Image (tube, rainbow over all chains, first blue to last red):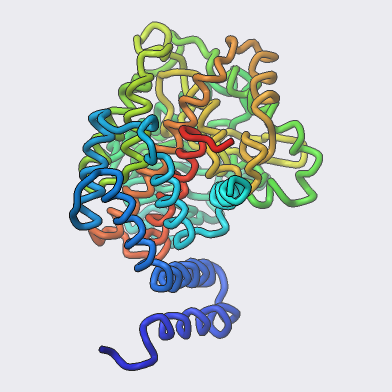
Amino acid sequence: MHDSPVAAQLVTAVREFLEQTALPRLEGHAAFHARVAVNALAIVERELALGPAQDAAERERLRALLGGDGSLAELNRELCRRLRGGELSLGTPGLAEHLRETTLARLAVDQPRYSGYRRALERKEADS
Amino acid sequence: MDEAGDGFQGALDLFLRQALGAALVGARRLSGGASQETWAVDAEQEGLSRAWILRRRPGGATDAATVAIPLETEAELLRLAREARVPVPAVQRVLAAEDGLGSGYLMERLEGETIPRRILRDDAYAAARPALARECGRILARIHAIARESLPPLPLAPAEAQWRQYRSVYDGFDRPRPVFELAFRWIQDRLADGSPSDAGSAVLVHGDFRHGNLLVGGEGVRGVLDWELAHLGDPHEDLGWICVNSWRFGNIDLPVGGFGTREDLFAGYREAGGAPVDAERVRFWEVMGSLKWGVMCMMMCDVFERGADRSVERAAIGRRASEAEIDLLALLAPQE
């Protein structure tokens, strides 16, 4: 068990330093790369916060969809094998929903402002 | 950034004097990888200031790892495109071996904007924006109409060849992504549906017709740049690629580059004599385009992981593969 501040708190502190202190003093290429770095750290923060629950939910869905068990990586490999062979397709009950949930979870971490993500979220909320 | 390490400036000055009677004022490296360079060249010719762009491969040879066409071919395509009234920079001179600069060519440096967010949001382009999609359609029709027999040798890359190429790159990573798997299968099931796969019906395809490669001014498109991915293929490819959501930069409801509608794009295409557009086939190529972009993100992540480029930018772009996944799902399994 590691002490406080935990990893997420340290990453947030570094991101805030970059954003508020370092970035305003940079220009040109260095400023551009610092902005990219701020975005990368924000991804890390979201992954630390959301990742564990997302992974657990994805694994649960995969077990139900595939009727078997394994690690997340093994289950995804098996899903890919069946999609490639045409054994599973968009006609398979639950498949589209699973892919949508999994992809929404990824974008919530990777790029929550992406237009395609915002649109998919709106559609999902309108459905429910 | 200004050093090329092989007596470049001296060789360039000598070349400009001998070939064009011009004197080098300065050369600034703009971009490019290890094998290919782009330089902004300022020179003085007959008392006038000249602004040029030099594209060159110092070693002369084409990088085997890329699918980019030789620069001499690129220069020839620019010449043909200009003849076909496609807005492109005029080629001044193609490099010869004795110029000592590698392979490449010198062209005029056009003024204009390539940064998508400025083109889509700045007032300077407000008047041009509503007409851009139609103009893109007209330009693509002209590119696709360039006579086959006039073209230099180019790779033939119909849908099936590209599917194979990207399938093999993706398989090489051994990183299973179910949405990409679904898209590969979806494309495979439709490969036979009307793509010109034989050499006879394929046309000149630009191959990367989208933001970043379109130089825009207040009145519209001033230059179609970056012809290195040009090939022979299905004309619908260019029409689908510019509709990929990643190039809409937030304007999701304006599918053509975030500035226009498919209707306008297709209308412009017909207006300039293009063949009837098969909207389903354009959608097919949009799916292919999103999938290709997703695999490219994986490629950039791979370059980072192998240590070839340790920049944060290269690392972060790997995380954009998921944007291709959400776009593919919207295309393949749309919600009501």
